[in-house]
Length: 293
Image 1 (cartoon, helix red, strand yellow):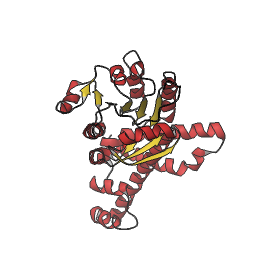
Image 2: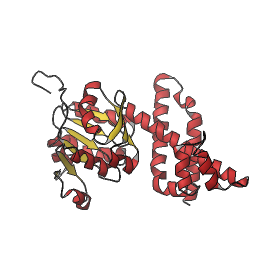
Image 3: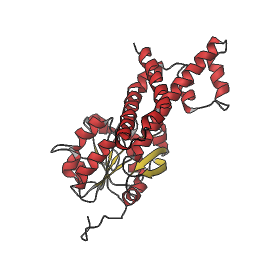
Image 4: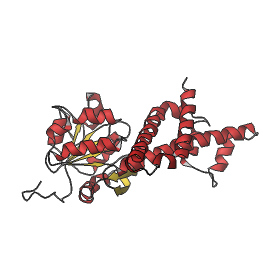
């Protein structure tokens, strides 16, 4: 807070980044290359080795990273990781500065972000949820889709950093909106994977080569991102199941929980409205599980 007790409207320059995996690593690199003073933390020292020749500094703990940062970006695997990184005497919250911001880039339950925001607010700090889509190639090219939820002022303060690795950066509404959007996107992608695999398999039963069928469909009105991924994987979900099946399973479970909570809260029957999507996603996940047995 400022001396007058008002939230700052200035942009954020000192950035901390936790979660240097396949997607987080190029995001952090883009932040560093954009000239933002950046602090990194990782559980394993080997994860930090690629940044030895950069201007980035390394913190001994998430708490010390937070103390050195105005914006703390978290790009870890799931809800449990968010809790582990932020809680405790060495966690982010222990070192969080007043008027700073935590950006949750992980795909997690919206309620996880809201609980974190309540704890941050006690320290005079803020939270936005900003899950991303596009993977390592898009991150390296600065073209991640960043789906942001949070208040207008806080999102505006974060935007210059987000734009170092994201294009577009879309502000979807209040805190939690980014996560809902990402979860719906991933449920849709999961369902489309199942449709694509079934389509190619049907073509084969009718005497059409799956690879050539995919080539044609990808140039027509039946094209989709999911179809391209299934075609690249040889026409089945086996490779995709091994690489991303557990994450897609997690995200479909989370959106089901979100929809169930919405039903209980307002009676809008949100789950029924999404049932076709969820059923198709469940079918695709069942097929993926079968390939791993």
